[in-house]
Image (tube, rainbow, N blue to C red):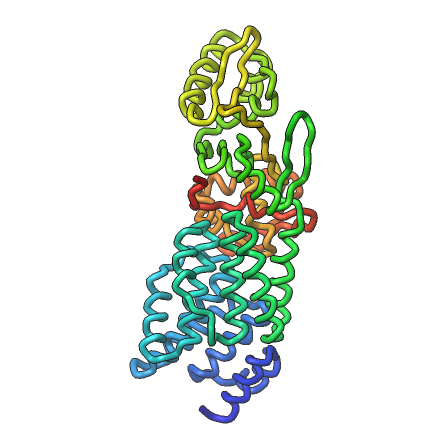
Length: 406
């Protein structure tokens, strides 16, 4: 390693990308390209950084597998920052294996953490938790330990386990302070602040009450029959009935829960579920069919009984009933929640994270843009979407998740 490369690398470690570029800005050899790519990434020029890192990886020869693997890992981190989630996980896994075989433990763990963070963005919490379970943060550089603890905290938060999340964030704070990286300190502070912000609102007996994540955890553990409008499910203790893919049934369940302990008029149910103000006999027939389907699904948790004017929800075991309302309502709430992280997302990345088609995501974005909630930058293939951060509450419960609610 020549003196200019060494000086540039030291500047990057201390968080001085401009100083690093002064040493290698005019060089096109693979080590210099790699350092220039990392410097551009630190400056936020992700597209240019990715191009430089790819050139560097191609430039390293067959006998330089270690350097090439490091470039692959750096490019994967840039792709994550760009919210490019469509790449193959196998390439990153192969680079991680190459780094482990050559005893580069720090970069191998960085590759693993990048894979975990990608899984979190895609809502695959079980897979992310399994990968973190075998990770030993002891002996890691403070910056990597902070990233690992942040990932563990996010898994815990999105699984509504606030005590483990607080412990992980305390460890992340300690590691970030030792690392002295401002971006890490800011990320830890933002994660800790999410614990103290309202995450949802409890609607009970005609009144709304904002709840923090720990209060929501306590509510779900209390045995109350909760109609969870954040994740579209009915929950009571350990039992749950997912209704995310049954929007009409969920709308009926929510309306019945809001009317509890009384009944809800048939015409009001038709208006909510079928979006019509002029019901006829066909709507009433359809309502009977949908109520029958809902009655069968929720039978382990509650009964749905007919009354002279409508229907009533009667929980089993004399449970109370409450509705957990999201801080953002509407069909596009999950899109807003993803964009609230401040990163620029493509429609393809949003579709991957939400498990929806790009066309569905595009329609949602058009509606949100018309309402002034999001904005786009770029054109065609380079178009990305942004939304202002939401400081008054946290959207953790609206983020997509493949974790079982049971």
